[in-house]
Length: 296
Image (cartoon, rainbow, N blue to C red; front, top):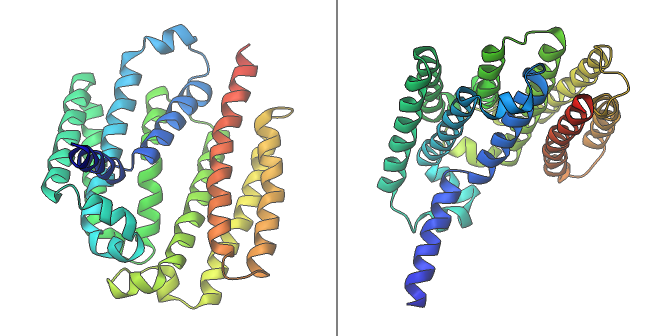
């Protein structure tokens, strides 16, 4: 009985890892916080709670992201055996066909809900799911396009909420550029950590197609652009707010990371990547606190 329980538990864990449930949960929180506190600045909390179209769109996004994680690990399974042996071992408790069934079901449910909301939302998610598959199947192995596509797909649901509320402004554009830059640096740093494995399995990434110094120049240039971007954001009517402090401290952080990256040991890439991930999470918290203060 104990062995059967452990086996079922391993299958559940395999499915959780396959769908990247933690990533999905964080993106869901980020979607709700950014939607209510950034894109939707006029609607009351009560109206927001009962706006089922918004919840439907976020629900479709969550299902599509989960399906994207499944298809990505399906195409990357050989590479993951080397780079993520523990996760691959756990996932072996569940046959690949079940992952594919889950991929089809998640996408299908997402499209049914999307069609119920409107045909425009349906088309929006058809495009999203197609490019999710195309990225995993082809684009993830194409130089530079792989990084740009990955980051764009990560931000795609946020773009959908921006269109829904039609909250276009220079401030939001600069914030989106800021987020795009951080995600791009994280993705390139991740490629530096799997450089040799990527080369073996035919993934054309910046670290294995350019020299070490050129790769460093890419990363440092993006960090410098993030500093410039943050300066512009600070001028866009967010004075004396939590987000103002966040972007101000961000300038200092990026400057420190540039210095650390150029003058540190080989583990610097790993630490910088996780510091930036933490900074994104703190940005979500800062946006929520700032939004609550502004609405009180």
